[in-house]
Length: 352
Image (cartoon, rainbow, N blue to C red; front, top):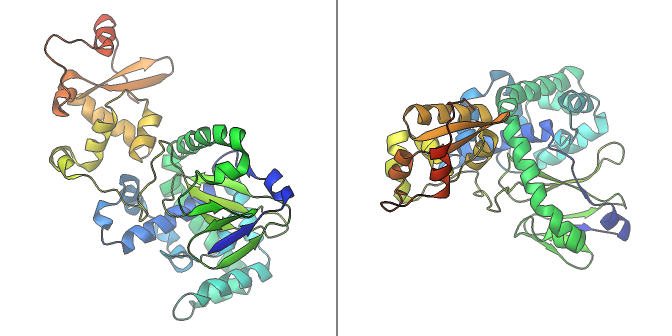
């Protein structure tokens, strides 16, 4: 059991992050990749993870030594700074005592000894710290940056779902919505699994939903100097949790369409059962906005969807042929409001 004790000051100072952190998303992307690789169902990993695997840069390989498929992971990587460069500078400035403490604790729970460069890192070696910073930056640029719009959209969609709960019931009610493993009890938060007692010391805790995480909520405690205590949890923009191992499993009745179009493109087509913008479509499927736009282009060229411009944005929707493919052809003579509106308006094709 993980137990986080709250004083009245901690409850009053509990808040939601104003936005996602580039380094947190990068760290959790790396962990998600490790978890997917360790899973027997890795071939059915979420589309964005398959893209991340293909784009993984060789310079990010040092992170394989630091971030395994299971916790604990070194806390000095849990940088919630809203800016990438600010976060990297914070990691470069990590005091030696913190490096040694975090890495020693991590390797207490791993077999064998750490590699030489990690032992140097624990001693505060600047070159080793720079190696970590470069690995994080390159992984972010190759894998996280292309889907940043999707990450931001998922973050704000999740937060929007929580605000009403927070306003009506306060932090105690909010905690109950984050994950089934969390429970508020006796002026504290309990999480099943693990063995840790956390004291917040009156500084409260910051809640940060992550679009790159699908496991149970995790706590990163304040270092007492710069970093706040943070509770990371999986963003659920549509109210549905992701699979615990970071994979998505398509029901049997979806196999034929996936075989015809490919799993990601089939997921895009199904997500357009209701019209969506490109960013919204990317969030629904779990891919980058650029990838969603490209899949939409292919489906549009096949006359399965159409795209109409609405001001500065675009909106994708199924054509009659697309609805037929999905088994959604309306009864003969029926005409939906959407069909009527589309029949009365003309518009040119636009790329998302």
